[in-house]
Amino acid sequence: MKKIIALILLITLLFSIVGCQSTDSDADEIFTPGTYEGEGTGINGKIKLAVTVDESQIKTIDITEHNETAGVSDSAFEKLPAEIIEYQTVALDTVTGATYSSNGILEAVKMALLAAGASEEDITKAPTKKDVAGTLIEKTADVIVIGTGGAGMSAAADVIKSGGTVILIDKMPSVGGNTILAGSAMNAADPEIQKTQEMPTSQVTAIEELLALEPKDEYMAKWQEEIGADMKEYKAKGSTYLYDSPALHKLQTYAGGDYVGNPKLIDIYGDNALDAVNYLKDLGTEWGPNILSAVGSTWVRSHQPEKSSGSNGSSFVLPQLKYVEDNGGEILLEHKAEEIIVENGRVVGVKGTTSDGTPFDLRGNKGVILATGGFAANVEMRQEYNEHWANLDETVHTSNPSSSTGDGIIMAEAIGANLIDMEWIQLVTGSGKGTFTASILNNIYVNVLGERFVNEDARRDHLSQAVLSQPKSIFWLLTDGHTVIDTLGGYAVDGTLIEDRVDNQQLFKADTIEDLATQIGMDPAVLQKTIDQYNDAVVNGNDLLGRKVFDQKFDKPPYYAGIGLPVVHHTMGGVEINENAQVIDTSGKPIPGFYAAGEVTGGIHGSNRLGGNAITDIIVFGRIAGDSIMK
Ligand code: ADP
Image 1 (tube, protein in one colour):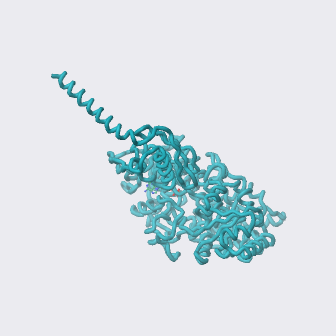
Image 2 (spheres, rainbow, N blue to C red):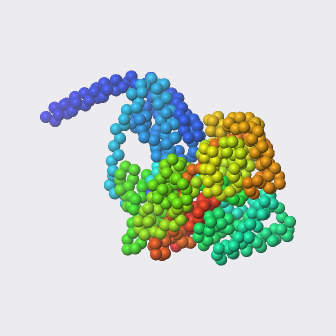
Image 3 (cartoon, rainbow, N blue to C red):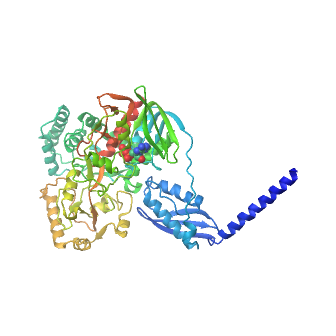
């Protein structure tokens, strides 16, 4: 009997194999075996790859060339080729947070497969994906950090340095959040380097104006006193170097945010700024040799990562990621936090769901650090809290990734956290493909007529308001060889080559002002007059529009132009914290076990964040949160 059953099974198996082969033999006709090249367009230009196929199957996909942003696009390169091979189709969803790179990969693979002889229909079949929710994931560590941007990474690194264990979660498929997209720089008074740079008299005047302000409180009076004493000595010695100090950084941060920020937090912030720059350096961030002035920074104290080491944002995140991973930090991606767990009045963990619907419950013996970023990409929240802009609906773009939806603010509020400064929402002018540098040194803003209309060293809110009042609400950012060649070495803030941007028609380039004006549709005579007036101001420090921060004359070809418009960039308000980064409840008391850092918090930037201050904030308070929770 057994033999008969075995024989039937064998025959069934043979038939099923023959059956499979016959299906396969239909499929045999899909491709001509070989390796084919394909090309698609990512966020920074071409993505090239090679696809190897046999008669019926896509076998391998090798990425041969791309210029996508490290960290941001990694998830697309890791996931999509594997999924294309698994499901044998290019009809796949893009990877969240890496849409452009995903589309570029899908486009390139499709091109290669069509070249291999496939029909459109063969390679665009809907995948039979089955996302099956698993059973509850339960894990425990000393600390749970929610969010893997700059603040979350710094918090996790300091938990590890204090001897703790840490689990970091992020709802996205890749780390870095808004931080890894940052094109800006990191502010810190760094006198050792700044002393090698000159300070124009217009900046001495700017300091004197700050010292003449009526102090709002004891902190401001203390900062003014310190700067006043320094300037007395500076003048007595006949110094001409670029003056800076933590006190000046604090005073400008406080005044630049209209005294809405908490001076106690600003004091801590300024004292730890340079330490934060050096902390990143120790982990491997390579800083460029010069100190610049980020858009809206109002001073020359912005540290820019070395251009050749990739985008600015990746320099703020990836060295920290390496430290966390090398030292046992566990990172769980596609884990969306939905609820902070409170037991007996203490925060003990977080609940949520993974991207395939699996629930998780993570416990922190010492508590939870919230580092979920701001809400610039949440139109509903923008509209709910906005009090100062005419319109922040979906027609106003954001520079932030889709992950900046204010989840942490909502979760924290639900357990009694106090929210502060929520109405202050920042628009920025220096963002997007028309931007090459985060610095305003040597950069000029002109309107579509070729006229300057604002002092480019102004605060970001003033710059944005000024652009919004210009024809078409756009501006042209102009720069020259001093910046592109001497300062940037040919690289834009996101790590792309400026010449590639010119080739992709994202930027315009000319050897003369006349040619540049013609290319961007302006009257050359008007633009020339604008440049001449600007150059006079560089020499005599007397700018018609009141600009005080200058570097060199605008006179070194080639000249460049890129178009820009204000976009929602940063949300200054958020969860209230104290000097230990503990979250404060609506009755003014710290919530036990609950800490927060970065853009999810309010309190430093007040009504207006100075350009280059965010990275410093997230690193300084991320580290404080990591240290405090371990104490
Ligand atoms: P910061 O600059 O303050 O560090 P970022 O925006 O750089 O803020 O990083 C915040 C991170 O938090 C992002 O990577 C984002 O995907 C993540 N995040 C936001 N909401 C959630 C959530 N509900 N669950 C898990 N991660 C989240």
